[in-house]
Amino acid sequence: MQKRTLIRALAGAALSASLAMGAAQAEDVKAGFVYVGPVGDHGWTYRHDKGRLQVEEELGVETSFVESVAEGADAERVIRKLASSGHNIIFTTSFGYMNPTLKVAKQFPDVKFEHATGYKRHDNLSTYSGRFYEGRTVIGAIAGHMTKTGVIGYIASFPIPEVIRGINAFTLALRNVNPDAVVKVVWVNTWYDPGKEGDAAKALIDQGADIIAQHTDSPAPLQVAEQRGVYAFGQASDMKAFAPNAQLTAIVDDWGPYYVSRVKAVMDGNWESMDTWDGFGPGMVVMAPYGDAVPENVRAIADEIIAGVTDGSIHPFQGPIKNQAGEQVIGEGEALDDGVLLGMNYYVEGVQGEIPQ
Image (tube, rainbow, N blue to C red; front, side, top):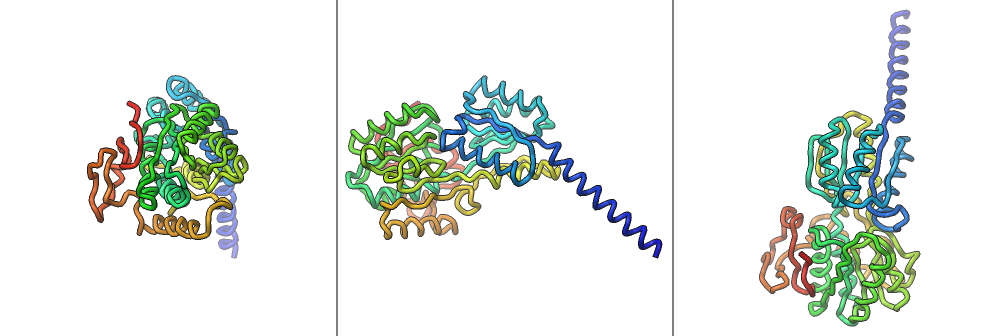
């Protein structure tokens, strides 16, 4: 009996020590976030910050963030400051942070780094992104059914593969429904500038666009659409509050579960460098509720596309596909693979204008 009592006492002590160690891990881990826009942009950065708050809530880990950090030398300075001030894991959330993140990661091998939308990795640097183009396939189909002018306006940020890929996914889905429809693109060379974004929306509407899509971060284009009586789609976040009549739906980025899992991996000591590119299936990309203007039959079609993309029966880049010059890129029954999508640098047929060099 004494031996059993001793064993039970030792087991209880070990359990208490284990629990205490787990609590200490949470207290000792600190996560930093670097944002390209303000947390109040109601789009891209807003959604990343929602994920940060989810880390705090679910794991009890201390977090910090720096907002509106310019891509380039300023980003390197901010990332290095976070790495040298007790942060165990740092998330850098814009494509232009790629090289600064890699440089700092090499200088701080004991800190874990996570870079959003990039492709350069290191032993202590992971990459992650969402398959936003899956959502653009859905909104392209909706636009194809709802446009009356056959002209769609698209506000683009920077000519990187992620943005070009989204324009092409949208256009393919649009023209699958409405073969004569065209997409007019305005490049604003910024992720977040409400003034430029709003002006771009006005210019596109003046050119006959009756639906506006965007790959920029503020709700300004939707607000213009609301004022001008046309439709639009939200970007990165549900923006219906800014355009209750204009928003047809929005592509919503849900970073929370990923952030929780990666910080938890640091706490558990099993973090590894990896690449993550998730979409509808894992839930990193979701669609906001449909606006009142979307007819029931169009909602049903959109739901079918979401289900098909999720289970793999629909590929957003299924052939035949022609480029802007009318040359076949891929034939019937084939689909572009991830390698091609990640380096996409051309427009598909139906997009007007040229990609800035």
